[in-house]
Length: 417
Image (cartoon, rainbow, N blue to C red; front, side):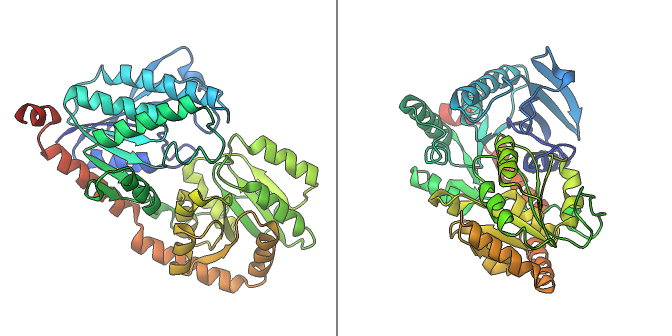
């Protein structure tokens, strides 16, 4: 048994909205017999708010699912602007480090990026404590945010590059979520042998067929529902979906449903109002455990991205949620990992990104061939369960931690050298 410290600013359980990758991995570590401590923020990422029970507190400890979970303060209310985001990232990095200094020395430190500040702080903590360090990279920062215009300040970019460089070089092992991310890390000079690919995956309890369809106000039982479930944020081109919905208003049998929250949602709701949409429904964020019920009501899962090269390497968690539920996919993304998966699994359709005319035409055609849509949905479910079982992926993650825990501590390696 090893002491494992797992640092992630965004740690979501099944009772909360958002991706549950960290929750699944830490529970797998605990079930394998490791002594797991999680350090995360109590600021709810989707709402950017502090829950009432944490008001006035800075560090809060609890025991959940066989783990100690330490939740810390970070500035709430951040938006798309970099100043408020950096405040949120920096305050969590500081408070997480303070929390880490209060726990027994770990054998292995695991940190997830983005955001980079907390991951870099965890790397420094691992070095100071002589612990092995495993870095999980969910997105290439700052490479993925510079083209989006989120970061323009040269000093901020330079600081981010230094943190990225330090975290990569300090890591004994690196986990990449996609092949594109792995290639980007290798391009930074990191040996391929130190990098493992562990994608997002399918939760068996979301595998479809056992969940009652959610009731969605204004959506009839016989309507064809094209649904998006996920963050209404910067990356997803949901404006394209709304423009496509406008073109589909002449067919009353088709409905568009957007489930989730995010900093772009108010703007999207305003856009829907300006377009006068009558066939589109917004649903607030729901806990992860409720997502299957909404997907049970969907006929098609939407994955819209902006037309930017960096999204060719995207393979979002919602892909696997749709596939697990047996729902076909309609991806509007640059040719790459997502479009390739859809072609290999024959689990949906691809159209050009940010092309509402192409998206509307595809939705109309798919609605007219519902039997084929069900066939492709079933093919996607079968493929995902065979290739992306999250339990298998989590077991691979546990083996990485086991190997690191069994190797000499970093401090002893330095003294021996």
